[in-house]
Amino acid sequence: MIEHSPLHDLHQQLGGRFTDFGGWEMPLQYSGTLTEHAAVRTSAGLFDVSHLGRFSLAGPGAHEIVSRVLCNDIDEISPGRAQYSMMLTQDGGVIDDVIVWWLEDESFVILPNGVNQDAVLARFGDAAGTSAVTADLRSHTALLAVQGPDAPGILDRVVGSHPGRFRVVPGEWRGVTMTAAGTGYTGERGAEIMIDSALAPDLFAALIDAGAVPCGLGARDTLRLEMGYLLWGQDLDEATTPLEANHEWVVGWHHDFIGKEALEAQRAAGVERTLIGFAFEERRVPRHGYRLRCGPGSGSVTSGNFSPTLGVGIGMGYVSPNPGEASTAAVEVRGEWLEARRVHPPFVER
Image 1 (cartoon, rainbow, N blue to C red):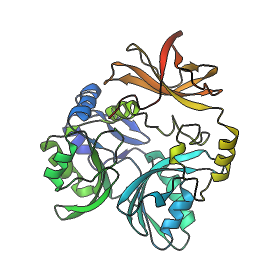
Image 2: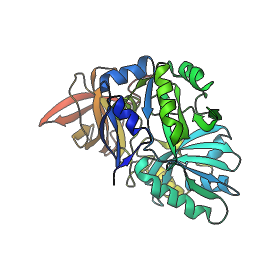
Image 3: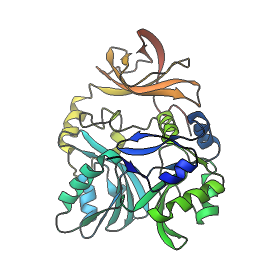
């Protein structure tokens, strides 16, 4: 069964062209991916990301559950802030990467990837037992993302304020409760806003009237790749650990969490397989699954696309054995091995 966003009719009126995103029919683009990408980098873009997962966790023990289930240390932040984290298997593989909004002492919103909503919600539900309670939020809310250098001003004009980076701010719009967080997937300033489904189309339209450009998920993907942000299912999965993905920074070693013992063993032994970034000197586009070489290592591309900002093809992929300090890479594109320079993401500084 195909799911639809609460804003589906509005997207049709705006000329959105749709595609399937994990069982959701969502706009891929409106005016075109390159135009929308540029809007986010230079002014402000507006995304409907209601296909993403979200649920609340509240009640006695909620803080302890978040600490145990996710590998980042929630005590590195405090209520009113957000944190990027990962949920791991016992072997250290990534079940999902998530954003956590910490609302109050024992009250959180967890935002997993859309395709992993049920699995992540189930893990938290099992951990909660009879103490803290989980509740689905996706069924009756929408999630909008306003991103770009002009986003704070647009938010100020429409909703009266804008959250700082990784801050979480509760509020109201037209008498209806909403929550805004200074998070996103583009590397730009802005916010993600959760609001009741019934009012979401009006808010989306108001943000457009204030200057935000409607953007599809095609631009969201090129924007995230330029920042080196990982995509679960391509750059991350249950067979990949945070250490292999060069994301040790998301592991809080000073607290107990599921998968910690396996990561400690891997850290002690050294990582054999590792994620690298690369950029061509031309417009040729690397694609998922293309063969990849770097130093003594070989593997395949996990994410690749044309970078509208740089004007060249860029990508990421895993190679084994670890290529060490090798500064060049090569990718097989339609039977031809193309030289590339190795890049330590982000590809674009913001």
